[in-house]
Length: 309
Image (tube, rainbow, N blue to C red; front, side, top):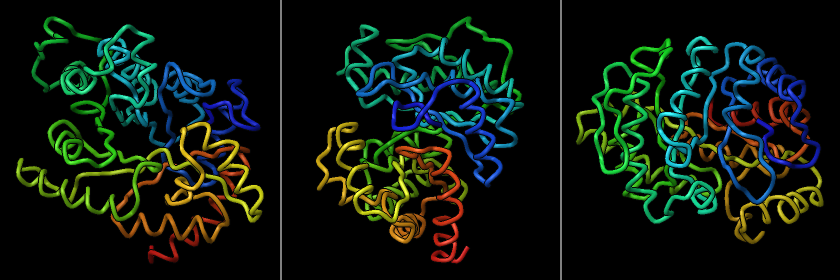
């Protein structure tokens, strides 16, 4: 969703609804929202944005890519996400991660260095609060004893919880331990690295008696801008994306982000598909409505042709 203050972005409910309706109309199946309290550019609250478009989102799956349970706290986040799931008729997939910004932790008075210990515990707590069959958590940081949030999710046993990981070995083990799916990061991986992570995930899932063949994955934060203009491509990388993620342009060019001509975007995404990526969540860097249509009419057919689907 157009949460960030990019070029041509408006945050009125009418504009968010128009985005959601167009996304469904042209064939997208997931509608995603990210989550930061403090960021390098102004950012609309993710769960609030999802709630605003529930009615306009049709049959699309609503997804957090990713929500921050450590920063928000397990009970407040579970209450918010359960409401979105109830209002949408059970169309929510919850992506969670520890976050990538120490400033989010500073904003709520938490120690950034504790994020991984807290995240492991808070993810289990979130599952307990949202799933009917999950055991209670009584840990170092969080306890769910005697907490029962209502109304409950219409999904059984509850909304799927996917864990975000860039693909490190500890991260992949965490996905296998805690998650119902894996969310990788489009600007922190390559097709080769994703394939390596997926192979490790298959091993870790099998070791836990879980079925790797049915375990879903997705690639989030795929910054996108389809253009036949080399000058526009350079502007997106240099003036928009580089200052946003604090990466030099030369480093961004080495990634497989769908920024550039339709053919270039399709080639990069087809490489991810061949590496085993099942779902790709694009994020237009500007002109969100135009880019939604342009991607579906120019890029998606080339990706399908390349991968034979």
